[in-house]
Image (tube, rainbow, N blue to C red):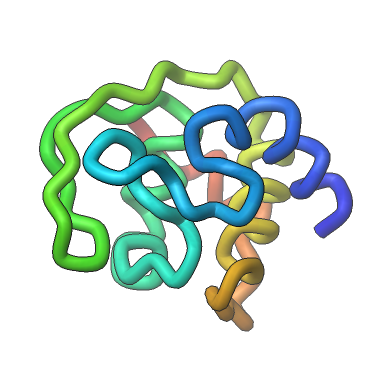
Amino acid sequence: MERGKDIYTDFCINCHMPEGEGVENLYPPLAKSDYLSKNREASIRGIKYGQSGEMIVNEVKYNGDMAPMGLSDDEVADVMNYITNSWGNKNDDIVTEEEVSKVKK
């Protein structure tokens, strides 16, 4: 969790904000995010390879781009575990480096 928090602070906080609240109509929230809980593989893919196109998060449509962060598989796993267990999110099924390595573009 601590490694994931450090990665979040270095790579994600500028858009998704300190408490995962995002920026209304621009950057989706990670806090209490239904997307994270319902779209695990897509969430991993977005962090690993970047994200573009329409997505619905907490009943709000977002249609932006997120550049790939250049993170290694273990860093993607760490940040996924941090965000899926912070700000009202709960994930008992830990994301592993092996799981991330199997997610393809």
